[in-house]
Length: 406
Image (cartoon, rainbow, N blue to C red):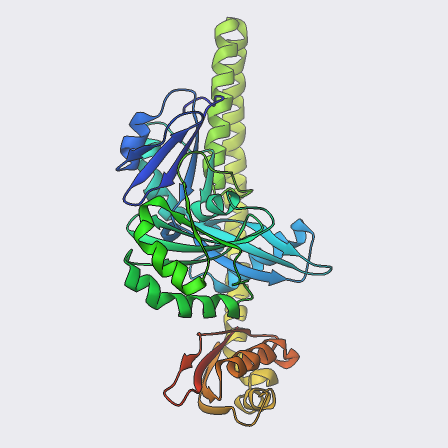
């Protein structure tokens, strides 16, 4: 493991590959992380910024302001929504705005298996990032603290559109192409999706990466704002987020302890002998403890199987014994919360863990109002309610699809 020093090396995604930046030095384009590892100098502290495709960013509004309470709520929310076990991810969050009793935040989640594969070339050469962050949060940190800014930049063959609110990342949208026509077509739907999540879409300025200069005219025409060319290379501000897995941090701690022991052993041979004896005794104690824990685990297995079987049985029976999940009750609540009788439900699909409705509203605004009423309905509080952006129909009505998931 490389020693920590005063210099910080920041690895960020570039338009095609990666970019390596040092304090006080020019940024270098790097094709792969293996080349980056070879270019790092001894004593550097490595920070890695992840591209959007390697991290899950989610905006949440939660009823708390204390960070510890928010951390627990974010953990519970991720356990409900992530398609993989929570134990296999690293997550952190930044607070975008706080009110008297609630906070709006953006959580960042990275899967350990993906981080292991991505950082394998670095770790093979003895480099372990001491900090891992989402790159859009660095971009947001470079924006003015009292403004809402639209930042557009390329990222490994894709185009990222980021909404930055008071130097904090509020929302991101990724386009698979870098051409002007793709951006022009995606902007209306993108802004509608952001507005539905409560993200501000009135911008004070637009920051565009130098590499994306051909897109400036599209942004000027659409937003009627001047476009400022920004330099997103070099050492950008660091967000208060760290996605380094706990196991990696344990590796760093073990490496530091080993180096400390080596220094002590060289200084005093007697201490070395005593340390060896203590180490063997400690190893024997660990083996005894391991045997004891194995015995306890073996004894607890029948209880664990019983609890799991009961939990499975309850989850199977829940749709039949929970009145709030009856089709009749759900249809009553869904129909009751319509802002106007002009909103028609054309399709209702009910499954054990979720429901889906498709309908038509006279306008997109009424469809959004309907979604808000469903989210505020206490009788539907057991469900996480979300929706696709309304689709405009030829008759100027809006077709909506709303989901409710347990």
